[in-house]
Length: 349
Ligand code: NAD
View 1 (cartoon, rainbow, N blue to C red):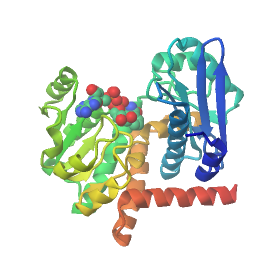
View 2 (view 1 turned 90 degrees about the horizontal axis):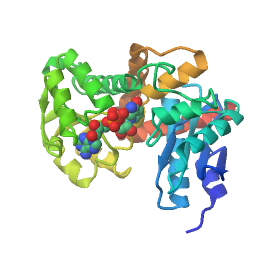
View 3 (view 1 turned 30 degrees about the horizontal axis):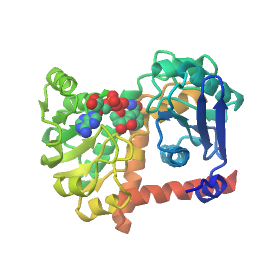
View 4 (view 1 turned 45 degrees about the horizontal axis):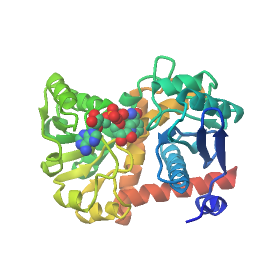
């Protein structure tokens, strides 16, 4: 299948797609800018071994557009972008990231980048050696990003519980967390602090068990977590985990977590809705790190966890209100609100 970049751009409303090639390091990369109508664009660099150039382009476009949705719903005066680096044999990583850094610098603040799959602290240091338009994860950056993301997931759960029961009443709630990595462990800590019953799992059982022991909650074997009866199921591991089989087995009233793209296909949001399970969209709940990064660059400040919680809780409240009034799944409402706001921004700019 051929690649029709311009057709894909006009269909998805993209502003710019840049191809980057560096002979010396072997870098081949794409940068997609989706929207700068309200301010600069934000998006991490994903480094992945793609099956084809087309797959890389499609991933880049999809992720950039999703970043605009995240920005719009979190009230960030900026839009979405993304870069993908094709992880190919012989790639000189330092040379490649430094070249990307120079490219980002050349863009003069139209694109702020940061971490994503394949782009770790070392890669961010190489980028930062060449550009200031990068969000770092260490002390030079906007604070702890995992805690920021966990705060958003926690706020989303609170909104969901209030929507169903009128209150969060944590001591009476049971939350199952899938994935006890950076975000999952911090979310577990917050939930333990407010008195919720936490159950968690991780395929890295050593890591998961040590988090569970330290915080004093029950660890269960991976892949048993989905069928546990609970108030909230919190995916904090990988995407694509809510597919036909998992949804059939799911025994939660609410799904609210941090993992990106948890719905295997978009119609799984409808299936959850039909099953009476309240699914709070991942792209609303996991914007905490983006909020921190954006305000760090735009206003030179570190957004507090309370600030992140209230932004995300307000967004979730609005989505749930409209979902109830219109009998439409929350994920469809969130997408419609985002699309409408993007259209409004573009008319005004
Ligand atoms: P992480 O790599 O620190 O943790 C993920 C954990 O999930 C690991 O411990 C891994 O062993 C575990 N895991 C993987 N597959 C699993 C499975 N099938 N069952 C159970 N456990 C499994 O990642 P993180 O930074 O905590 O991020 C978690 C999720 O949140 C990811 O999907 C990430 O894309 C998303 N996210 C993170 C941030 C952030 O600020 N870190 C921001 C936005 C979104």
